[in-house]
Image (tube, rainbow, N blue to C red; front, side, top):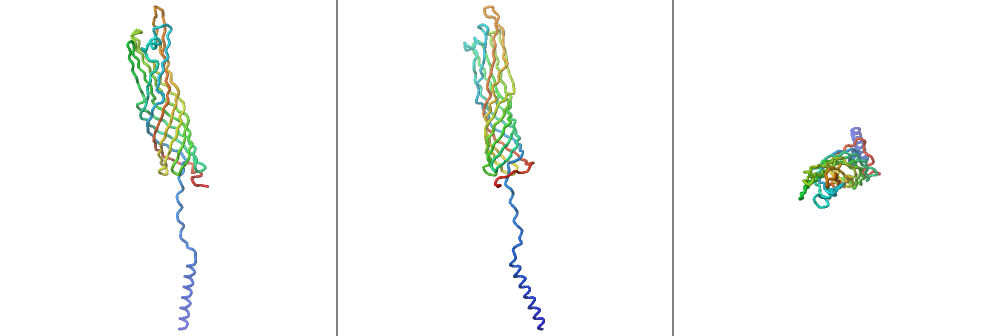
Length: 278
């Protein structure tokens, strides 16, 4: 009996000691999962945009020359045909863009973006009728595109502000029509369509609302230089002497664009140092 009691007591003491030792050991719980890394702006992107444009230069200027009185220049000096007309263009603009961003030093961004835009409501026309003649002028852009650098500052992991500038190009159209009974029922059309090039500058803000999606608002000023028509001429006689008269038009193409867009981002090269890294 004593042996049984001694064995029971030994078993109880061993159990109690093991339990107490286990209670003193550190917890073996699994560590919590690591939070996802902050988003990075580095990578390629593509998207679409839409907005509104309006011109800042709207003047069409005529150049006239006569070898003898009685041609374009003479009628411009008497107010029969204009020396200048003003035609502003404005309307809807929309298109797409592709680009690449590189985020560095936590808060800075370098990028390159190319876009192409179509325009509506961009061809303006004015018709003028005088006692001895009629003229018609039109100007507009059929498309505009840019290739620009971007320099940005990352306000928060999701918010970016940036400045942008670079090359711009567009298809400019300029036409002048001349009709006049003062020169044997004159009917001449001086028209030119040409790809112009210049620059675009501006800035904007972009919000990365999902890991691969962002929306942006942007302003651009563009200047594509001047388009000059090839000119027209006609022959006539002044006091029985043969003469020649010429006319030519030119106009500067510049304006403003405000637009909003959405981009899808793809990072194929892995993240650089991201926001918050030391």
